[in-house]
Image (cartoon, rainbow, N blue to C red; front, top):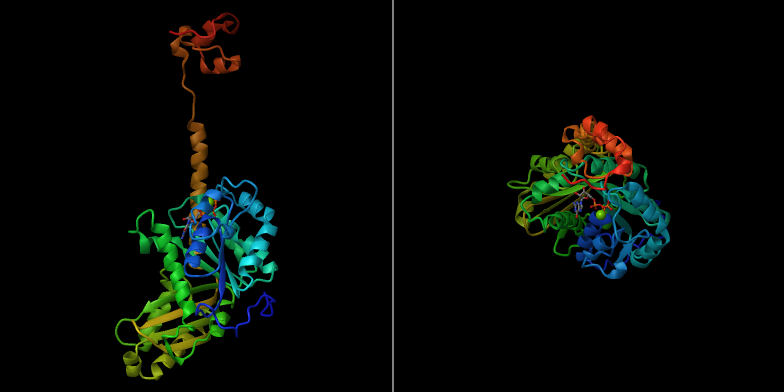
Length: 413
Ligand SMILES: Nc1nc2c(ncn2[C@@H]2O[C@H](COP(=O)(O)OP(=O)(O)OP(=O)(O)O)[C@@H](O)[C@H]2O)c(=O)[nH]1
Ligand SMILES: [Mg+2]
């Protein structure tokens, strides 16, 4: 999508909710709908699309008009089938476009969210393309299955990931469900997914609030245009906020930066430093900390990142604010994370093992030899005598002879 997109919101207009960029959200499938609801709770305009009416009913924060049943059925989901999910999406294209224009026309960037492993959500790339064709700039948030999920979910996710790479998405953010488990494993089963989604959405929103936050006093301003440039740069994008304990030094900042890139608590990681192309770094610290920090520290940090990345472009911000010293980072232009390659490896092993088990299960399923039971134990006259012949090999079969014609329908022993 070009910068000149005719749906580009006029960025000189005041932002109604104190955010840098006006995002609208479209969630696809159950997971996507849950994310859409979490965004809507923070005040973002949102739509949820699902094949299953029951899934949509669970999204109590959204109005009926924000919940769109796609496809003709309305009862069942795609049951993990990408083709059923895709067909439903295409069948409802006109309805989706109409709702997007009605709900999202005023937004600057549409965020499309879906579980890559879902039969519905795995069609996220198709939805991205549909909305991009309507001239919405679109970024995609795809949720990767955790290691413990089934090979079908992972296979869907691998296909969906490849489609996403080819799609019109201006950025691809990949939530790693394994990490969410590590962070929220102690949440109750009822709250777990919700807690995970809220953590992600709150972190995303925090980054979007930096420039519009009136409680922060800028020393170097990170303005909405900086965020826009990084977020719309392309490729895989990661972001995160790291609290810096102790002194605010160049090394502490570099460790925090590297942690966001590689030890990200929400998003799939495992990138080489030199893969980063476009970076945003914003430091927020209280006045005392910044007064004690020599001016050279931040520039030394920027020089350090430049060396690590072999020259990535950097948009920066430095703010006086309350709370712990925090480095907010966004890195764009990345390739697929190493988690994607690992998932391909796991899935290859798991699908092969499953295929073998399926074959073995079929060959293990053998009929019992009932021949020792004798004629009186034949409880029925089969409509297909062949069934009887194979079930009663040996003596009973011989003894029966023309049984089908003469015996009573049931012979109880
Ligand atoms: N982070 C997160 N992951 C979720 C959530 N709900 C489901 N998932 C993950 O999403 C994947 C399954 O996708 P769903 O969204 O349930 O499936 P769907 O898109 O509705 O597709 P069908 O059920 O096949 O129609 C699995 O990897 C789940 O772990 C959620 O609310 N948050
Ligand atoms: Mg579902």
